[in-house]
Length: 187
Image (cartoon, rainbow, N blue to C red; front, side):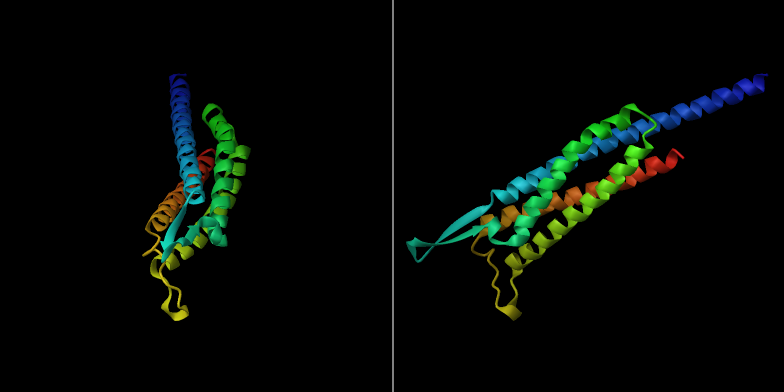
């Protein structure tokens, strides 16, 4: 009789420990979603408000650099805005994971949507990174000159925006891994 009671006590302690660990992972995922949201929304805002005007010879002739002059940078802003909207809308579902233990279906849904958002965000950031590379270094073979020598503020802002976006890509990949681990532990 005592050995049966000991097995029940050990089993219940294991279940409590697994539930506590699952709750900690869910809290960490929730915080990562908040951090990724702030990275994507700040990257979108920083890129969308980036512009610089330089005078050329006279005060009346000016060169203007704006993010929407290049479609890749516009795609970057739209991709970051979509992902930030998704992240803010996924917060209630992530909060449910903290409260409830049996959330396999919603975890699978979040994993699938997180993977789609990683693809969107990584493609937008990569397209913008190619343009930023050309802006910094130019291309001598095609006679594209580096414009960052003239438009310093513009280039600094778009480079900072890229850093925030790539941090968000890393955080989303980490979220996918954590969700997959939490899902595999429950089975």
